Length: 171
Image 1: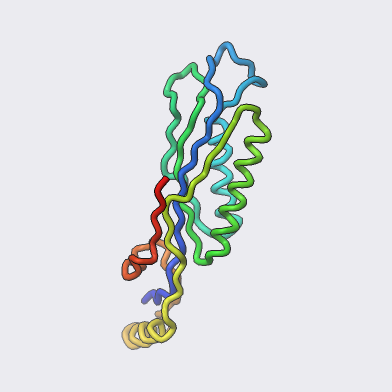
Image 2: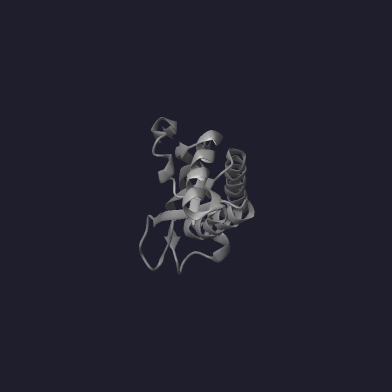
């Protein structure tokens, strides 16, 4: 078959910092902790949940706790997020829900703070319908109409002809 790409999904990258309080694992009661790693674990699960709910894609591709000690409560975690969806309004919705979730973590854990920054984005693109029709006609000549399937590109490399559409933000 032949895939007829009719558009490319939007992509947004984020940097997240979750700060709590470091402490000794044996000397800090559970109710007195502001464990950044526990909060980060909850947030990672929320990224997956939100992406599924919106029928998009969400990935935490990097997660780094400041401490690597077995007996230390983690005081800071840095992580990155890659969100993708073919509709910009859905990306906006996911972003707002994730920000709201981070705020709820702060409210629920005394001494916890969070920061989320969008570091890069490339807007969703719908390809010119005339061009899509031409590709469909050419594909139908090779594999027949039933062998052609319209789809959106999810990898992002199909947008290489749109380099000016990408926006990079310094943090």
